[in-house]
Image 1 (cartoon, helix red, strand yellow):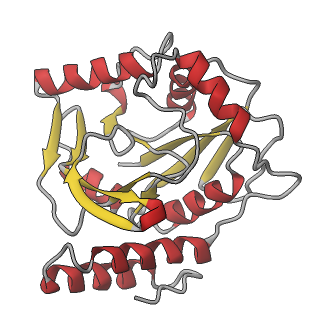
Image 2: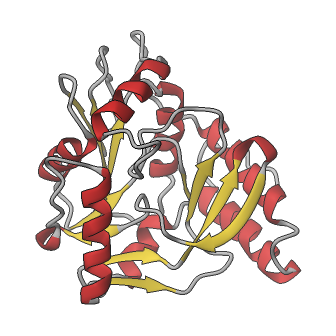
Length: 260
């Protein structure tokens, strides 16, 4: 089954180049990346596995997720963001383990970016969920944050969200403490979705400026090096070696100077 990775983006072109590299390194053979850009400048990508939707400004992420869903063609829909890290086996692991409506890894790496501190934690993050297309019933049109979490909780309560217990092979890295602003799904300081999004858009200004969207494999490899360096004290020697070996195997053949 094809896995469609769905990515909203606005004003984070350099990070999006890394996201493209993470996608192209996915070892699942049937894949596509669908990007929705509602920034003031269009994004062009010539990769045959990538589709970019350049649209006018959108009111909230709920509307964006619906458009991404409708534009995708995969049987499985994977929620991505343009600032987190997706290891090369993320899509294939979802394809392997999803047995019901939705799946996500039981644990993810959480990275405090400025201190390069990685913690393997319970995966409460929405940006690692994979959902069967026919069961994608999230009510996201009016709101992003609260309704997303309501639906996530409903999936769990009904037994429709399954997880797989993972350790070193957790395929998703959630970034925090990067000094930036976040269009978060969690109500922050009592602000509405629209207020959060307006604040976020005022801070992110890295637009395409006529550049074609190409993969930043060098940037992605630096992220993998940081992950390996930051997890050495968090894993057993056996598991740490397994992580390094898996990354070396799955990045082989790409323009990726993975060093660790």
